[in-house]
Length: 140
Image 1 (cartoon, rainbow, N blue to C red):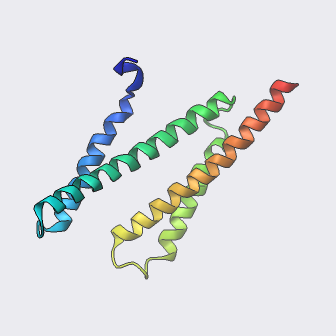
Image 2 (tube, helix red, strand yellow):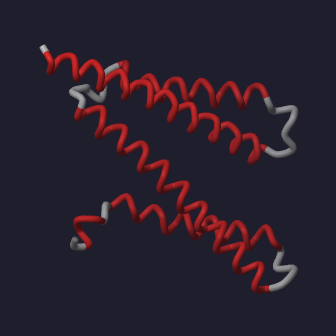
């Protein structure tokens, strides 16, 4: 398989994600300790950031493609429902936890994580229902 067949333009986002993760790890370490451990920690952190971006963008892209393949429009309320549910969940976490967090960055990270996983769960439900409905339509 040639590279253009496997490479999508959104894959370019993985490189900045790696750099942000590795850079944040290096800045957070203060360069104290063993250089090998600091370097390996930075690389691991960068890889985790790159993987997280890859999974998030890939999940979103696959959701859009799967929903449209099932015959849905991208402006259907059913398609937009997981986004709305995810935003509500993220806002609820941000409103519920501000006293418990010592920094806004940790609060934002919690809200984004809850919003993402809520989106994934709602997306799975919507896609399952969409495929069942599309199957019933084809059977008739």
